Image (cartoon, rainbow, N blue to C red; front, side, top):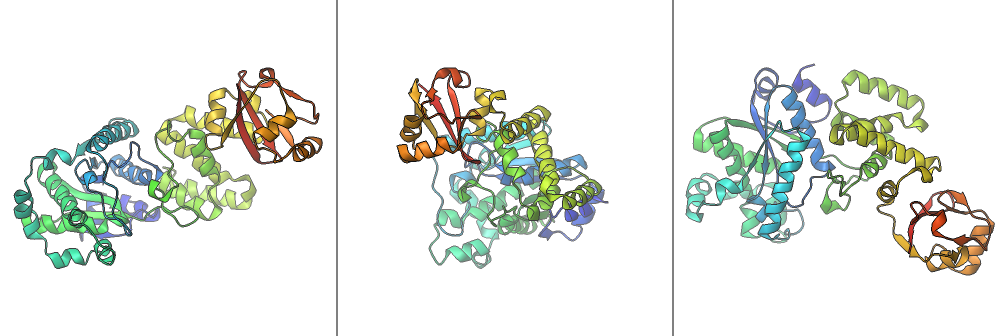
Amino acid sequence: MTLYEELKWRGLIKDEAGDDLKDKLNNEKVTFYWGTDPSADSLHIGHYSSLLTAKRLAKAGHHPILLIGGATGMIGDPRPTAEREIKPKEEIEENAKKLTNQVKEIFDGNVEVVNNYDWTKDMTVLDFLRDTGKYININYMLNKDIIRRRLETGITFAEFTYTLLQGYDFLYLYEHKNCIMQVEGSDQWGNITTGIDLINKKLGKTAYAFTMPLILDSNGNKFGKSEGNALWLDKNKTSSYELYQYLLNSSDEKVEEYLKVYTFLSKEKIEDLMKKHNEKKEERLAQKTLAKEFITDLRGEEEAKRAKEISEALFQGKVKELSKKEIEDAFKNVKAFETENNIDIINMLVNTKIASSKREAREFVNAGSITINEEKITDENFIITKKIAIDGEILVVRRGKKKYFIGKIN
């Protein structure tokens, strides 16, 4: 299978530019770039599909450049509905540094990272209008899908010119880095074609590009912080356990797509895996493999192994085997409570709102519905002390089979 054929099989090519793109990918070694604006201090798994595509191209001998949009990030790519918030310059600069370090770590240093602020910071408005604006017709810009949609609600001049800035990035990299190809998510197609047209009109050269379909969750939403479902690549923002659990809970309808996009498993291995998975879906073999491969590639074998161990310990009721840090990672998104030392179980349940009343608290206890650190509590007079807490501090309270609460004893 050629590189182009593999990318198509994995569903990683949607739009294409350049008649001989297939030949460039299969038979030449070209420099390509992918860009992102530093709107946050970490990339998320929506970005990761693009990073892995860049890795696939790099493994085939192509040279990757990641462009951090220190300049374009000060404006923001137009959104379909409303103008983006303008972030402070200092925040953008700090985010750019963090993203640069993050990407270099993911690529083990085998990637070139550039910042478009470096070649735009000294450019005057007149320079930009003469050297870029004069080559792009206003009617051409108005036909861009995202601009056309925003005309109904209003679009600022700054956002309107974003496509010119991104087009200039492609031109600059073409001239200075011999970068002839751009690879982006499909929502960037309008900006990509601006760059291709600018290169053609100004240099008389041909540029290439392809876009990847946006990866959606099971609800049809794209992964990203604006969608409220961001899973960050920075483990201090999203733990490996959180990633593991999310991927483990991937739907059967989406898991094969995710395996193709987010792992380096071969076509044969994925097809064999899906065959076994479909025979016993309840064992979630495909989801477990996805989680393991994803975290191993991103953070290493040890992180993947520990995420699995935390997941299994919780599933098997072995909370006491986990450390304080592992428990905090596992219950990061569970609202924490605080309770005093030497308090009886009934008052603790009511004070922390695990039960709505003392009567309900007694019903929970008498029915055997309450466990603390996986010890079932059936005595209404049971006293909560630091002695029963993990590391003398942590309480993991489970009500029923699935409702968890995390607390600390003062």
